[in-house]
Amino acid sequence: MKQSIKLLIATIIIGIFSSWTNKTTNECHILHKGTFKYGDSETEIIVKIKGKKHTEYHNDKKYVIESKLEWVNDCEYNMTMKKVTIPDFPYGPGDVMNVKIKRVEGKEIYYTSTVKGQSWNGKLIKIG
Image (cartoon, rainbow, N blue to C red; front, top):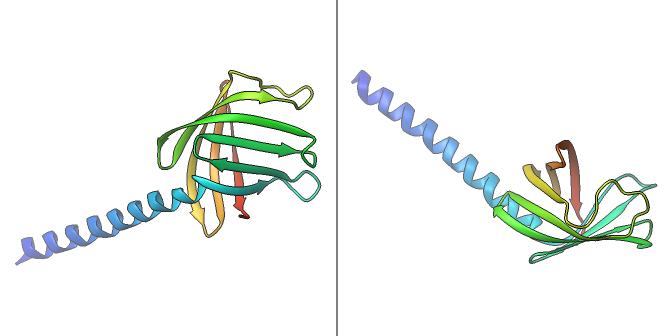
């Protein structure tokens, strides 16, 4: 009887963890296509993702970053910068940024980015 209860509890715990993991992974699809924003009201940056193409618009579209995406899995991608027009930007064409989605809450995507050994956390908001 005790072994049956232990087995039942273990099955429930595995089921809960499994459904939580699948839900989190499935929510990452929100970032695979669409229009997003990050930054504050003074420095809002627009990001468009479609397939393997990633474009960021800075300073009311005055400057851009164009990149190619390679998805590692549903919640992680490598972004190879192809074109950067932002003056004095610390990264340029050929640099690769790794982005890992940490969690998704509605239309808010929380992530960690790493490029050239530097990492930071951020948040994108899906707007279209």
